[in-house]
Image (cartoon, one colour):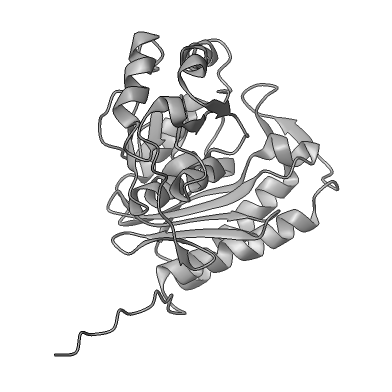
Length: 289
């Protein structure tokens, strides 16, 4: 008896995923064309939290493109959600009842972008009744497109992705970041970094949570964690990791949802060990509450 042939991964032209890809590609191309030419640099929450007119223009472009295809869908974007953690939480709560919610970071890694450091990305996710079903992260500098659909796997350059196989922290390359909340969350994240550095092969902090999550999904990093992140930082990347066989939770092991701010994503094998080190260092992010 002949076995049915496995169907190749195909994105139909009118699917949610196709629209997300189109938006990310067009915005990414425009963002790259503006590199080094932005006119206005503003400070948001702190001097480490930046925004340019390019961020705002890219978000408007993505919002308008989505609206032409799905005018009844809701939209949650970084640049339209106010400043600081409280404003981010409020914006997400106000959008929580939406049947379909697009969650967008037009430039994840604005500080890198401002300095001409080629590590930034466009992050677009679509949630249906609170569950992320599409995730796209696009790296304009390398022209790398990372795509995931719920239940259909994750892909880069159309090739299926799989998380790495490291089974211990000692053999792992992990990544993190430096929270914009310098008073509360930065010391905790630094405590986690200090505790993990002697335990891992090495640590990176590259400045784009979305792109680092894409690298976990692609097996280039063993894991990623950071405190006080927003939904638009991680929604797309979380699905990439999950669909590549990894594990995504908060820093104490509770399942990921759009409201999670203290975030861990790994290949799954090192997840519990990483969380254990963070707990020992009192660096889960919940200690300050």
